[in-house]
Amino acid sequence: QQQVKQSPQSLIVQKGGISIINCAYENTAFDYFPWYQQFPGKGPALLIAIRPDVSEKKEGRFTISFNKSAKQFSLHIMDSQPGDSATYFCAARNTGFQKLVFGTGTRLLVSP
Amino acid sequence: DGGITQSPKYLFRKEGQNVTLSCEQNLNHDAMYWYRQDPGQGLRLIYYSQIVNDFQKGDIAEGYSVSREKKESFPLTVTSAQKNPTAFYLCASKDGGNQETQYFGPGTRLLVL
Image (cartoon, rainbow over all chains, first blue to last red):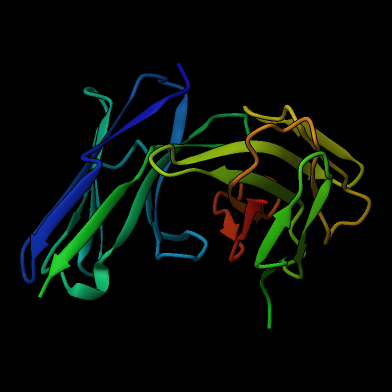
């Protein structure tokens, strides 16, 4: 199964709060899990990525938590800021294939 | 200034018309990709190319065609067979081998008149 299921579809968080976006997959051949950030009218940009041999990766205010047994991974944005308001996509890459499968996206709004 | 450029930013298509979207990269990347983005559906892969003169269909290739005659260029043609072409089209590229990160261009919004 090549799908990656992402939730929630939209999220409103107050400034300073924690934003959490979840993704789930079925294909155990996925070996690379990136998160992309996209602002309106722009192309997505890589935010942070993780491999399945690591349970957590942190870069600044952004953390990926990875649960290999549950086949789930999530993005946590600590101390969320209005400038973080964007659409976030999770994705997964199948070993041996040079293409990504994307989730459907989460529109995050951080209120001032 | 390295990166991916897409042109035009906006494109209007008339019924029965073929239109071509441009994608150029100066990153010396081997692989290039075309995605279609619709609200609530994420990014769906149209075509991709791992080397010059070779390309493969993605998940939604019907009504589209591509060419890869040069490493830096991967144009996408939306043909009249594509009945619902209104969308945001994104081009991406990636270095070869096991390099993982795809870099995206700024996108082209296609609208039907």
